[in-house]
Image 1 (cartoon, rainbow, N blue to C red):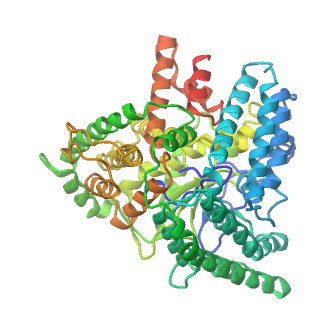
Image 2: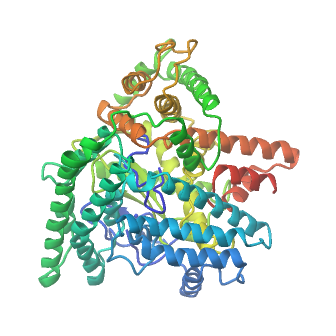
Length: 630
């Protein structure tokens, strides 16, 4: 999972398959990071890593700051407007600025009043009016303009529908954004530590603002379901408890500081901890009683949510039916692979049990598992560069990190604008987990690293000669991004990187999980009838409920109950996001097939990938149109 650039959808779990400063951009280096060093660099660079030249670095940083490459002139009015948008957006979203690596705002938190949220929507409205008045000068500008219009129109539509100021669920809210921003902050200098202290001390004000915004939205009829409110309250307990993550005090303990700065840091940790604890109490006592009993979003809300996450309009009923077909196809293939692993007639569960008990696929210790992930990520980048992809030197570096939380999520965060902070793959290892099965996670590394999110996101960030600043830093569509990451898993199988049947089963298992999410998410939120002829014989003719969703997930997903319960809560509270993975992959595959049909014998897969990624992140409808014009 790639975390949203504007910090509106910071996620804790990527379907259970689901950044730290460095001194220079280096080639081919992966730096080990642990919670004990978060968020500092873990040590010297590997021998032979090779710095970029000082001249190149100076030129690149200068052009990145200006929003273009030093080798290319200013590209047009759309780019000027895009650069100005980023400049105006950053002070409205200091946590978002930290996330994308824009300096100057690391000591501030977002304005979480209703007026603060409205300021972001107003910026989108003003920018849209200007965009519509601009005639693009060339195809590149046309793509950029269409991408900006599509994202901003949907952003305004969500704000006008009350979705933005009322959003609170187990994975996406202003609260989650505030907590997660510390994962990306440097502690290398006294100033950076002072920034952390300032933000911690600002928590009481920010959460007081957020409480009032949520209450006002609820009284206007826009409020989350009671289940979501109660579950977020439990997360507050975990973050603030010494028996849980003890996040704020743990953060302060990991930072070296003395004197007045140490006192300010400790005071801030206490303030943030208490503010978060009180916010949890507020959720239980004041907001939960106002929460909705009904959890289904309904078709009108769901259509907007689906279009926002996909960047495309899809036929929801056809997509729902396709979900059953896709899950059935994947499970048929899984049974065939299971027979190779565990013998003729073996079930999927028997093959899984055999692999989980095989020492060949076991690693003990989370640090050891992190090292394994890093080695695999490094090898993938090395192997793919110059063969199937052209990977710029500046992005041949990824950091694999252990997150300071324990919710089980695996996710990716992109590099900073100047590449001093590289792209990062994070694992929030659950408490007590010390044994890891590698056969499940080979495909995860390809999803989060290369050719998945890291190649996609970091390459876009690097393309200052082709993409404007908004495209490189802020543009993100879940269907485009997560769809590409799932497409990348399948691509690695096609390229022979999942030749071991165990690794192939791991990929198929993750794919099946994502297909089940299509069925359950659409089914529950639209309260659809379960097909009478569904291939699983599952409650034919009945209407979906959360209880049936739980039963279906347990029958088709090999995920621990605690994680699966989180998944169900995620779907119920974040309608339309979970299907974006598999539906996004489907649209990527369709786009590739369309390109093959257009070009015939002249089709080149490597060129297709290069052309597609050079467009940056955009909604899937604009993507299909742009690819069709190439």
